[in-house]
View 1 (cartoon, rainbow, N blue to C red):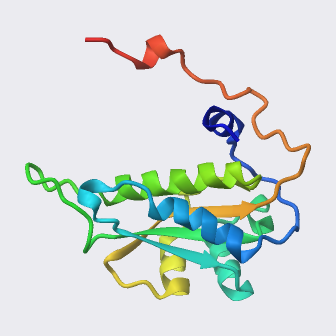
View 2 (view 1 turned 120 degrees about the vertical axis):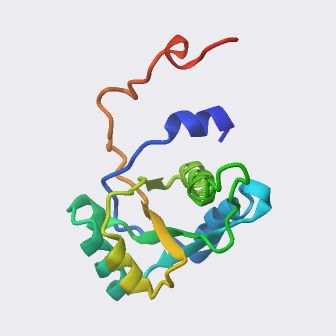
Length: 172
């Protein structure tokens, strides 16, 4: 797919089929995250690929929505605050920014491979911490359900209502 096609095709998917995803496909998706840029190249990320029924059940408990339970795989994107770069002038931790960049690489690569996903940030972090046995310095930041989606799935009837460029750009 051409890059603009990937960007335009990307959508928040909330309706998955039961088609399995092979390990090589998931590794390809994670490779795209591994290559993402990060502040001072610290790469403060850890990606948990969750396929076991027990862990998937905990993940679904952390975000209790029917559609969410249908994904084949969940990627829990975590930030390692012990490794992330902090800006010197105000100690701003760039961990979440770095994770967001890597996650968007995952989302775009998934789209390119014909898979759907959806950013989920509204979840119970303690349930995830417990399920994955995370140390305190590792923060679960994003849950990504991943799966093949129904062919007729149209998630956004508003057709991606976006602001005009003149509303978001200031030329100086």
